[in-house]
Image 1: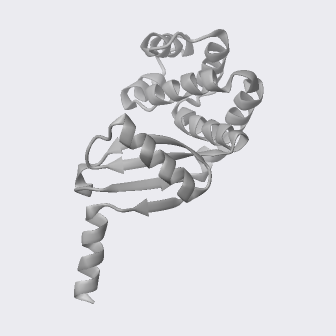
Image 2 (image 1 turned 180 degrees about the horizontal axis):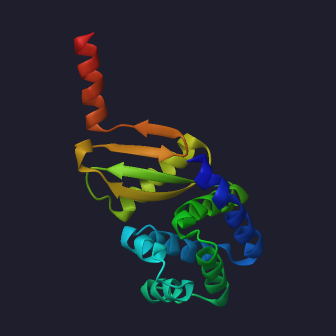
Length: 176
């Protein structure tokens, strides 16, 4: 999806430069808008020739859980006016990458077969930060097919200690 990345880059960079003083707050509303924009029904609504950009903006603003400040509203209006609503999740991803690069951290997704409580997650995060050698912003996603254990994805690096991965390794060893 190089095309999406190419389209999203100028928006992410402009947003990053315009909001360097309040990156945490901007990250929150950009992520929320990206989740809203990922909705297929909303994208179909926005693509309708009978719908105006103002109507699309009103729908998104009413769905947003957090109150959007003027900076967020102006950004959203620009994205909608330029027909880039479908690119908003990629814009958010690239914006997060810029924020992470500035702070020297990375996003990490921990896939687990079962929910992880906050104490165990903090311990896992500390271990992973030592393993990867940088600060990590850890999120957890449930993936029951792992059976047990965890799989961690940090950028393009994967650390898989799941039962499913071990069973696959055993299968390969036994059939070789």
